[in-house]
Image (cartoon, rainbow, N blue to C red; front, side, top):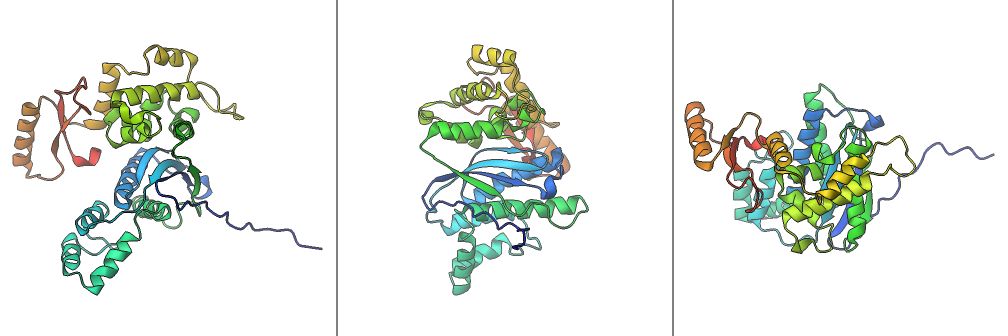
Length: 340
């Protein structure tokens, strides 16, 4: 008699050779352990953005949970990367030497300038890590594993063996928006928040609080996205989120959903948050003991602070506004770069 099969071969990951391919990726902790507290989630959020910048991929949205994370990314066609851009991207990941990247920025610049055979090998090695989904996910998982183990007196494997990926049609905006909403609703389904805007570690929460690249990502899920301003993109996406999130997850009646009353309020408001709600979100993201006021007021305190403490790097005057018509166009804060 044949023996029963006790092992399973690894499922082949689907990978597209087409440019501008969009993937929904999920990766989980080993044994599904609930390891990530808020500090770990925040570090992973920053490292996702850093790895994306280095790799040249676009994050459309993401959700970081206690034992896994989802991310929807576009992997564009790899174009020529100048040496100047190569150095900039390297600096994003390795601003200072470490046991895993001993080469300083200055050494890399000088090496590339010489353009020797050694320089070409270094150049090729870095370029191979760019414009590739597997290399992007490898960079994220390895860097975060090192940080997590060092900061939690831990060693060994952090992640389950492989990440899963699904190819999403980029020209099918309904498909993209459906997947994006599924990701951003993770903290609602888990019963952590009733409104996804209140969860710091998802793309929609970040987009509402600070705008920028995350709004650009959500814009790409809309057929007429390029014609819409940031406020309209967020309002329309919010209505889609609440429409989808107000019904229980199919086949899972234990998952939480957005209350019908909240859906009604959101639809009545056209998906727009009040000025007070948006101010509260930005305060949560941008301050942490910062100084708030007009540009001249904040800049004056910044200069005094730097003169008193001799701190020069990281501290900046940052605008609350994400676009010219923002309610907070005249408001600024002083904070360190670590809170971006």
